[in-house]
Length: 450
Image (cartoon, rainbow, N blue to C red; front, side, top):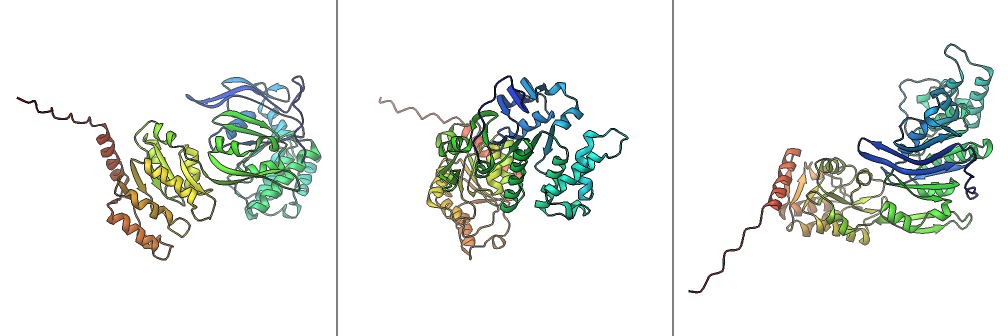
């Protein structure tokens, strides 16, 4: 992999140029004064936490979202000056997940990419057929051309989406999380094909990716977004750092370099917790939610929707609850996927428990890797209200040889209260909130000696 080309001269016609672009959803600013360029043949990756503005930026370049301030250009023309068909001949789009309503053959699906080049009543030209055939061959799908799209595996279907974009024969390709539902082998395959496409055809590529290590391996440049602003921009070896992951993602990590290529990669440890941030946010709380495997996600959304401060943990990276908390911007303690909760993460979790005004325990599955969540919770059961929310029988969730049931019973005997509905949870929290608002009673006047 070579480093990114030097910044182009301002007079050069570029596939993408954004200057001071801001985007708003009602009163919320989704992008704030973002500058970005992409050169021909360059593979640029957009990276950042959920909600940082990656998809919004891609939708701006596609012309799907209006720009509140600034200028967005494609190949030297302002986006709002280009008709839909003109844009479709300049930029192809590979979405994160595409719902398929019918089951066309693979060849027919790839032909969709040729629609911008045909008039309303025109039939396929020799050039259309050549582009479709070439895209199928380049993505190794020629032998599946007559099979139904729904018969393909996930990796094959993503190749079909890329083949459709390839048949569109545009000089710019946009991708939104193209590897999100693929195993590691298919992730490498798709990104290798995209990189070869940029090299062989000179196609400019702009892709949103969550995986920083994949970005480091394949991208010429990495553009980091944080809360709608551009945080950094440059070659992966200059941008990726332990400090970056701590500041933008709130995750502790070690930086390593591949001895063969010099490409950097990050080994995350746990989510960083800043006690001051936990205490200073507005709203009642924090209300800490103990969960895992998606059990805490609806509770976290419910709390945030009602204005409560919330925290969660200890969770594993890539867990649905961890992804929900990250999307909501909530403090949490996080461990590596599938690993037992380490002492560093448990200590971070106890910090969150120590600041909680109330603790809600979701009906999560208990196994050896997360049993420590129950044992670490026990000392707090007598200090703050603990609510066992909508509990299902513990026997159906205990995968820790009975230790889960014993931990659950200790919480109940220690005063934890079972709540079987959202209304009951709301009433309990309202009661706590009202109690915090009550003015303290004045002390009785001291007796005056007579």
